[in-house]
Image (cartoon, rainbow, N blue to C red; front, side, top):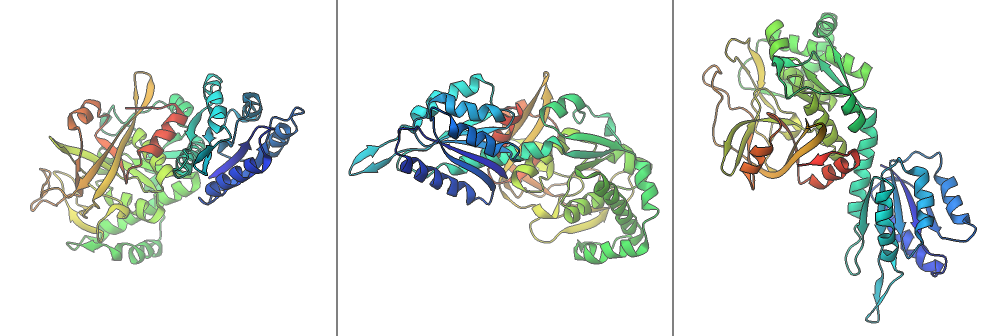
Length: 447
């Protein structure tokens, strides 16, 4: 995170108090490891020397969020004159608080300053979050940093690129996107490339390169049955070809034309390719040209640092949903060793299928969607538990146990009424605050 910290206090307030309060708040922010540019105390001196000094200091510096730290009463104009120069940057309006001394409250009227500012900042159209500290309670710096982290993710995604091999697998509607509105709201550019390019590059991959991947990664997988090594080597070649494209074009996420592409035209289920991309490259991956699924992954990874795996829905229950995958999960969410098995589904050729157990615990499940001319984020926090034994009809018997969680929800009916797609993105822990902050900055409605 790159943060600008501007600390304010009125010219008649004892300067040592304003400096002390700002210094403590700044230290709390710096403890996060963020890169911070700081300027304080900024007063409402008549000649506006402090205001101009702050503007000159911050101008030309690269930061993702501006913290307006109000350490005492300050006339609105002094803060706005600084903020207005950086109105395009998300801000935190952070009011500090007083303290108790000899049984009485000592205050510098911090919240007089913030309450005078909040509506003005809203009326001016700033993207900001209002946070106030409370006497006797811990500093709410974590809420400040949550918004700063969301701002940093928003900035990063403005120039991010996502790669799609092919487009609109299975002619699905829910996986489509509109390039202009996506660029305007969230920022990523989605680029399409052809499967032919991958095949042509794969043909030029050397045996030694393939052997290197097998020796360093695949030998660490637990194969339940002996695979056809010709299939394994082919999958590694496709992975290395895709890696070339991803490295050249700096993609943060990728999807492949799965059913109507690799499976139908190449006779190759791409599960192991996705596993290698996720586990070796740390790349967000999802099948079936799911464009907004990829974008959701990029958002969640930027906010949490997690791989942001996808799950899809198989069954609904009164207390939750069965969410699993018919192909792969990243090693990051595997409980134990990555376990794979060569399997065949219906008329498809044999592929290397991930049959690992999935980590349990509290998860945040979300999905970006375009609805009625605007972007919305459907989000829910639930508990992922190990489901009972289950199988998807169509697999060669004995059918594999697919990776899955039963996600326990407070209100399954409400979730089903709002569900946006078969694919949802999961992250571990309650990350709803981070995602809400990001959506507030981007102008995305939470539903």
